[in-house]
Amino acid sequence: MSDMPRRAAKSIRINEEVYYRARVAAVISRKSLGQWLEEAVEEKLDIEGIPPLLASKGQE
Image 1: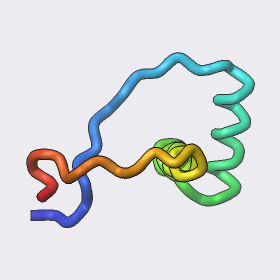
Image 2 (image 1 turned 30 degrees about the vertical axis):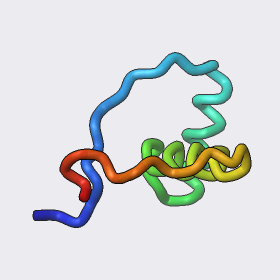
Image 3 (image 1 turned 180 degrees about the vertical axis):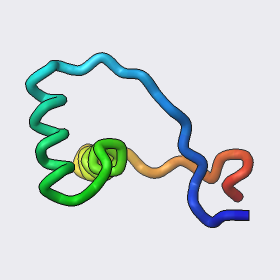
């Protein structure tokens, strides 16, 4: 079994300019948009002081 966490496709509504800027930043960073956004959200959660959740089913 893989050590990578399970990833599911998600659909979100986002401002067109923000999407474009994030896409450009991802390309510059040589990351997928999903990977770049995940890292950005994790950074924001850390700044806001939102603690990680306990391991969910299948990731124990």
